[in-house]
Amino acid sequence: MKVTLKKICGDLELTIEAEGKDEKEIWPQLEFWTALPTAHPSGATDFQIKTRPAVTNAGKTVHYYEIACPSTGQRFCLGQSTEGGLFPKGWQDLPGGQGDQKKDGQTKSATAPATSRAGNVSAFTAKPLTEDEMKFRAERLVAEGRVTFDAASKTYTVQVNDKISYQVKPGPVCDCERFKTADQPKFRCEHIRAVALMANQSTQPGQRDQLQLLIADLKTAGIGDSEIEQAIARVCDGVCAVADLTIEQLPKALRSLQAKYTDLAVKQKAAA
Ligand SMILES: [Zn+2]
Image 1 (cartoon, rainbow, N blue to C red):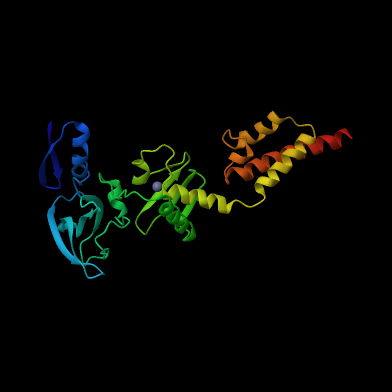
Image 2: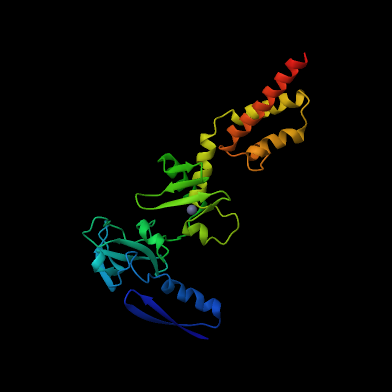
């Protein structure tokens, strides 16, 4: 079977023909083209297809493939995978511009401006990473203090670089390309790992233990399991198992049980 895809790319109109025995063979052939931008995030469409030779730090001559958008001073960069194909990376300033960065032509981590994320383009190269690489990146993100938490929206923000940040929400889900395109369930990208790592690190040691002690005290005082569970679940979004409480929930659970304990002490005093 044969498929013809018409793609608007700025003011260029591309016609892509793909052929394969079935849709599964054709799909990957079209993936790249549909990921190209239809316009610059500013709305500009003066697109030019460019190839630019450059010399890497190692002295090797490579070619950069890009779509220049002169009116904005930016270009849409394409990375080259190790298998030789191209993949969309996102917008950067044209050489000589502010955001110009020397790259070695290999598929390093994406540094596309955040603006392109609002557009119709995947700005991140979802290059597969090994477990170790993701663990390493997560550790570095935490060590560099790039993970912040907003209690109101229960969202962690992982500021990957000056321009790109990802949001990790309970689930956990991340809005990065690697997470979105992961095919395994419960996939954990480096951002989710960083959040988990930070959550573990910042748990005040003892808070969980303190809670367990308090539960034991309440039980000793004759309070039933279900009553204790309810007291925790009420303030912790329905979670009642101590081990499952997040660092944000732990202090709430503690306060709730402490209040219960105080009540009890008051009552006992009154009864005495
Ligand atoms: Zn992620």
